[in-house]
Image (tube, rainbow, N blue to C red; front, side):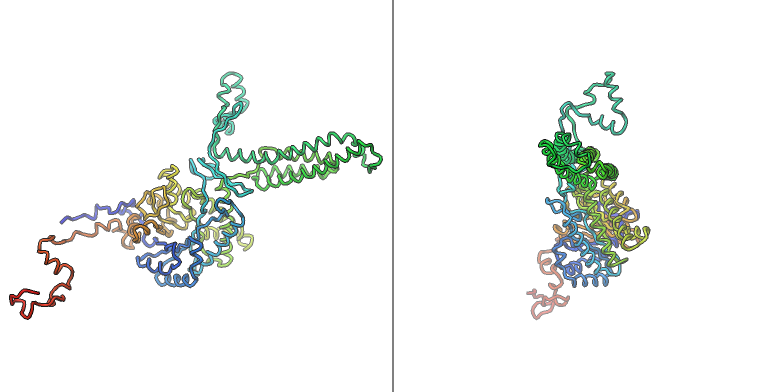
Length: 618
């Protein structure tokens, strides 16, 4: 018989060092999810509690199934959880919170509908834990393809392979990728443009080097230029704005032409300030005056279009652009409201000044923006309003909103975007608390930080590998989101498909991720999402997860650990094999019932004789 040493056998292929409790995950912080396909959650919860799990997350991911769950079931689940000492959490309906509806793009009505659904989810979730703050997870986005990145980082610093832009006016989405453009006469090379923008070289220095023959035009210009997605979005904004202003300028030129041809004929009459008697005018003067009146009407229509463009520029412009537009407005007003502005020529001059200023490329508003920027703006409004509605109704017992990163490839799936979304949601919630609840800034900030945070799904972020990122990038993402953490979802995969396996069965670097999540990760509930395991293997994934996470067998947070479980089953004697006649195994091997009645079985004795009579058994 072979003997195995428990000292050296590591058990399952766990990334945790079982001799170091620092990296082990306590079983009490782990939980299961209910089956998202069933509305009979009471039956599902009852069955899964038999594993001894102490955390349970109710999966309300389908709005239809969520609405199929009677309130009586929620009440029974609450009572069951209280009796068994199980802590409940909720996974809310999976829907887009920014207001996108598939290919139809953004709609404010869709955003408001999502907000109402989130508020209802918090109200029903509160019934499960009315005495405390139940954690409710919502996805940051759903069904929206996000940008693909070459490098990760905050918005504005990372580089894109493919950028999804949103037209802020129409809500429509447009993909933008790197492309090659050909410019007659050649455009500035990328490296020269970067040096000019960074101030490493000036136009004067380039001209001097060119005139001295130290460089040639081919060193500066290129017939072929490659534009990044970020540059293409700027090109689209400039083109959009140019298309907005150019027709107005063209119409203004027509009005100016009419004035130039007709104004000199009646200039003295118009500037005299006296009333004009049409009967006293010559035929050319009458026609000129009539044309000038038509030009004035024409200028009025042009002014309406200019006002519309100005409003659009101010609405979608940044702070610097808005300051410039405010000055343009003041300059225009100083002319149009003066004595000069009462004349048609004064109006034409004021309008020309306005259009010239609006035509400045630096004032082109951001009509097209990256989808991440747009979605953060709209989703934070949804989450901020939802948190305030829950706080207004339940005060300090309001549910906690945990915003989860969706599978990589969707919008707002990176740690930087999720962190920014949490920060903006807290900010909007905080503003409502200060304004409507008259709360101090310090108290409002503390309340916002308590009731809004992040759920980090380690399997979802691992899927950035399919975009070419490495394990180090996956680990770095955990470090970025750690300060916002409230909740953790555990699932493993191989970085490409949205499969959900128990930890340790894919290539998610769970040990390093937990280290980066730090104390908040240790304290947070860790919910095992292993739908793929349930579907194909139809057994609870608890033991496999305990082994992979280096969890201790006992509550003292010390050895032995679950990955050593196999070695704890010592060798045992299993007999000498098939050494007896077959009848022996047929008669007695199936169980005790085949033994004679004298030995507790059901087989009778041999006839009327005794055991020693020599008569064979029947």
